Image (cartoon, rainbow, N blue to C red; front, side):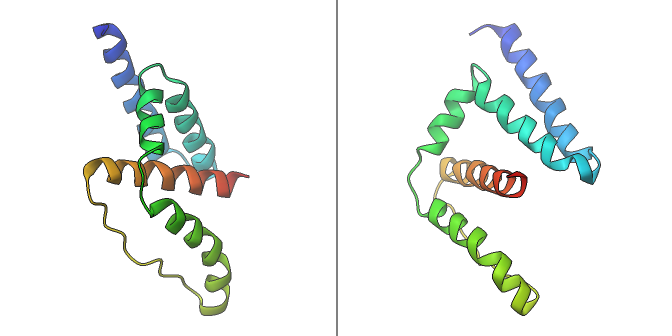
Length: 110
């Protein structure tokens, strides 16, 4: 693999994550969308993201359930506790994190 591509990818990924971490609150969702779209369209990272989206597990259903329940429950009780999910492997943990980010950003932005 081309070392220059890897070095550039690392640099841009670090700068895009830093932008998400340090941006003003009003720009948080656009910065997250920008990061996720960049990952989906990157020649190296898109394959990894595609693989992580195909990792099996109950987490996708639990994320969707949490996002559907949270608004109603938060209105009636003043807060929502989604519980705790423990991934069985580091690959599943990465898949959960990617899916949760995608669900949250798309739900809030759409």
